[in-house]
Amino acid sequence: MNGSVVRQLILKDLYLVRWLIVGAIVAGIPALALMPASGLTSYVGGVSLICVLIILNIFLVMSGVVQERKDKVLLFALSLPVSSAQYTAAKVIGNAIAFLVPWIILTVAAIVVIDATRMPNGILPFWITVLVSLLLYYCILLAVGLVWDATAAHVSMITAGNVSVNFLIAFLLGLPSVRTNAESQTAVWTADIITILGIELAAAVVILGTAVYVRSRRGDYV
Amino acid sequence: MTEPVIELEHVEKSYRFFRLSDVCLRLDAGQIMGFVGPNGAGKSTTIRILMAMIRPERGTVRVLGHALPREQAAAKRDIGFVSEDMRLYGHATLAWHMRFVASVYPHWDTKYADVLLRRFNLQPDQAIRHLSHGERAKATLLLALARRPRLLLLDEPTTGLDPVARHEVLTELMDVVQDERRAILFSSHNTQDVEQVSDQITFIDRGRIIDTSDKETFLDRWRRLHLEVPSGVTLPQLAGSVDATVSGHIAVVTTQAYTSDLEGAYERAGVIVRTVQRMTLEEIFIATVMHNRREHAA
Image (cartoon, rainbow over all chains, first blue to last red; front, side, top):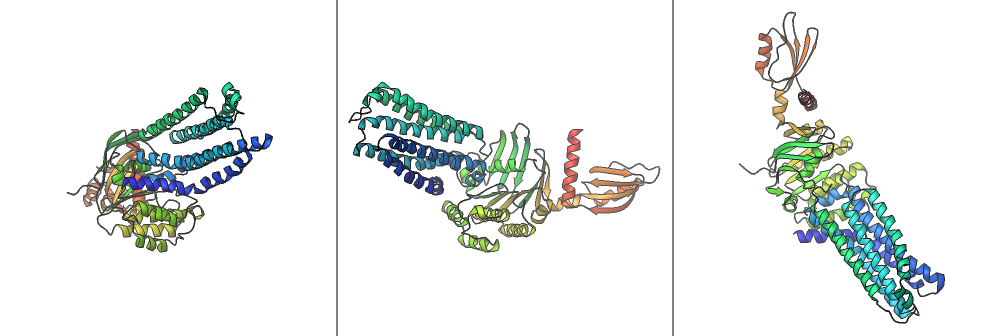
């Protein structure tokens, strides 16, 4: 029965954010359409794509995790026949699916746009690294939302996350391997890029895993 | 003897400014226990421990035969929990909530849910955020009752309700316990509601259970005696006396151990018993709390 309850909790979370998922995908399409253009238009397209995923990230965590707790809807969810650990698992899986579906669709679409248009494929490693950093940002914010109740923690994390994306872009564009290969017709996956991608993905798994562990072991849920 | 529905033994939980101390509680099938205490007494903390939402530092908790928190999922299959501050998903409709809860509980009673919709005059297609406080309270109660739980844990379910809504909710609770296998723990600081529906009463104050008994015993053993103490006679301190106010020759004594022998004891001491008044549950509650606080302060 419990597997079924966890599944229902996941489906419930996906139902409640369904328009957010659709909205992110719909908003990402014009952003992607602008990217192959030149100059400022391309820049606006790229920044818009990043903004769409950041906004999705913040809305999902704040409405699905933080607000549920603050509004005492959590009392209703925890009155269902699940353990605290199962509730946490359902919350993380449901929330992760809600972010990953638009993230994967927009990431694949970005690859297709870069590959199929006159954009140089050499920029692909840069974009993939930026998009994976947004996945890491999502995992960190979800972890903070799961573990900490204080609004100050959430606001601080959102501020730090938004600022960090700018620093990451500046850092990536400053890497010689990225700068050199950005205009080439083929994507060059240098050791720098592979290392950064590896760190981002490993950090995402470790941070989220730690948050789930901490949350599940905490005795008091309300 | 059948296994109790609720069994708390020596449960303790500490917060920075509050401590739940040595709580022992037992509720059997077919009983409605009124769990009465002032604001901040520990009612909600106790009930949330019973729902495994809060983990006690010491003591054992068994609900419907399941040890908590380890077997909380199994226990919650047969518990309906409603709390005054519980909220539902504001953007979803009541019908969606009913479908969601029905998908989780195999014993969901669709016919009963429809009956409750009509009795509570709720519109299933209305979004929760558009419901009034009273309608929201009735909606959460509907979602708990239609699961057909063996145990209902109700944390101040009537707080903030208008008299009609309160009557509707209390009437429904009276109906629920017609089934003798079911039990209700009903917390409130409104003693009128508790007196109306409960057959067991437990008082809690400042994190401690200060008295527990069946309602009739409570009402039978508490009395307020109006006495006349003639000159030269000293008012005797009889067992069970929790409060005595003396003004000139008139004394008012509150006792928690009333028997017909008590009047004779006063008369033998030369005191004239003018009247003996039964007390309401509210008066008993206040007297118990104040007596307990004085004893702890002494």
